[in-house]
Length: 263
Image 1 (cartoon, rainbow, N blue to C red):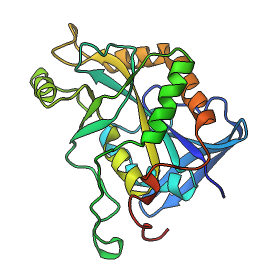
Image 2 (cartoon, rainbow, N blue to C red):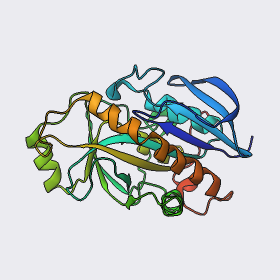
Image 3 (spheres, rainbow, N blue to C red):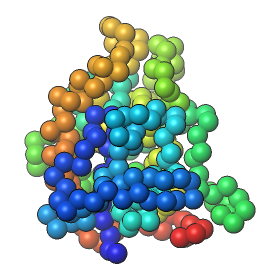
């Protein structure tokens, strides 16, 4: 089948864009079905997965992260470039900025966050010293510089359960813990990608300052407006990065764990 690149589109990134020879594939997994648009981009095999489903119908706490990541692995899409809309806790990271995330803090509560639940799958404890693929992050940074797109190289993503926005007291606590960004979707997606031996990098788009920092109440419409205004920039960054990814993986993501049961 050969290797390929997946783009996981978050809020505001719903379309595969310039993918050629496109085919929508429904992939059956042990965790349910996931739908992926397959095709090519300048001769490179690519896939596009809308995290929230068609029309943004699936809230963050109900996304079937295990089915999504399993499907990408089954299709041989071993490099994953993901997007996410986030709020900023850091005054130096402003609405409209891109951030190439390098660490996360997990405050989710009810999500299935591993493929290794014991039994046939066994018990596995995966190292997360470097949660995001350094090779993909470097590619994204080079692509951003080439396109004259300012992207912060590093940031701590705090993942909350959602779907509500956070309180000002929570935001103050997250800042004390070292958080730069807050969102609702990156965990367990990044965790499952590592368990599946995939390379994974996240481009976070800042859509607003978080509660207590922003002078106005937060709305989902505000998030969509900022994402729409920056859609062309984030797409150009992603597709340039796809072109620049080397064929051979030189990182350790592919050896994070042994083969998953059933695959």
